[in-house]
Image (cartoon, rainbow, N blue to C red; front, side):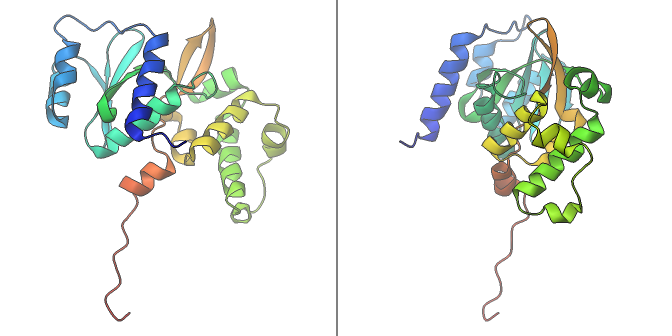
Length: 233
């Protein structure tokens, strides 16, 4: 049975709320007032005046709420779409290497996400047992192979059989599962700035903190639109 988009968002909210504690906003930040704001501009201005900003792209801005939470605020429809994707994937943070999502606003207007420390290239080998360069190469090649375009790369990376074909590296397995399940591009998944480090059960873990740009979102909001051919051509 196909679930309607509105129903899916409701189920995501309920699943998240059932498991997670509320973030602690600073004095002067009225969460209910923020939730009631009607548009992108008013929400962004409200948060800018009350929380420190740590990042901003073309679609979303990210603010620190407390020691464990950041707030991602959509600035346009692209941001809404990416927040909704992250809310969906974030429900399954036990299965995928992603930051937890605590709460999501209507239509993805904003979301609360687990705060992570920015990952360093050395963290990949220290935590996941794989050098960043090898990680990037094998994930890119796997995606080309999946699309029948592996010949473009000439040959498989040196570490490909060891890290992918063997299935022995849990980190690589989880990244590939995420890409396959949600049709992710290699851009966010292999870019170091998309990764952070969190503490899970007393151990450091690498998690994606920017994972809303699926191929579907890219095609809908970022891909160049083809102009119709003139009549007669």
